[in-house]
Length: 274
Ligand SMILES: [Mg+2]
Figure 1: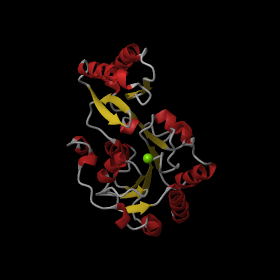
Figure 2: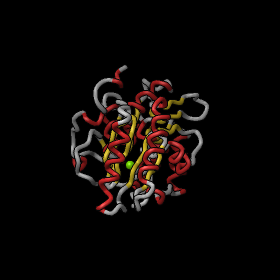
Figure 3: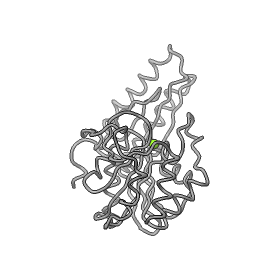
Figure 4: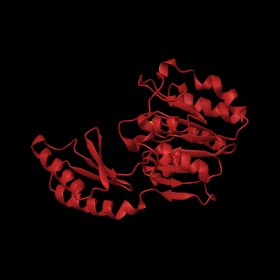
């Protein structure tokens, strides 16, 4: 299967600077006139909601919820997020959408589609086990926080004193060494243990298109994260990637929106034109 080949989609070359891309607002009519069925994939944080410093503050506005709902009346809509699938589904709160959580590992099609997949389900007992071990090892270190996601364990050390940092690192290393099926991913003052599986958001979107009978559709993906590049690249031969934000990093998207406000405007126009 093509989406099992090679490393993550995001490691393929990026092609453009966002500032050089045309606005997606000027492309709505052209997209709506596509002879192929459109299918819309939407990131959540930074795309449907403004970026906030605490993830729990990223609340969907009632206006944006109505816009997503209006588009979903006209074409298939799937939310794609790094958050846990249930968490992002609760935040969006719209029935009838598909949801992809945990960076692509946890997939469910729209209600009634019967489509669902947990990509690394066999690794779940291992994650349970590693979570327990890390909680035991780090329980007495002030500031160390173990956050379990369904397909990952995040160890936060922002609040850990310098003198205790080596113990956190040792515990993470031990947990990884005992479980070659897990790999480490670095974040800002956080290290995450994840299944060592060649899979990403792009793989999940291609798989879902196939399962939903949309392999001939024209997918549109809107997102602002580095991980959204895996989707832009995966759909480049058949669809349209829309970059959100003012970052100047290279992207595989071909259109741009400046911020969630423009995403809302794009959704309005798309609903009206479809
Ligand atoms: Mg985002």
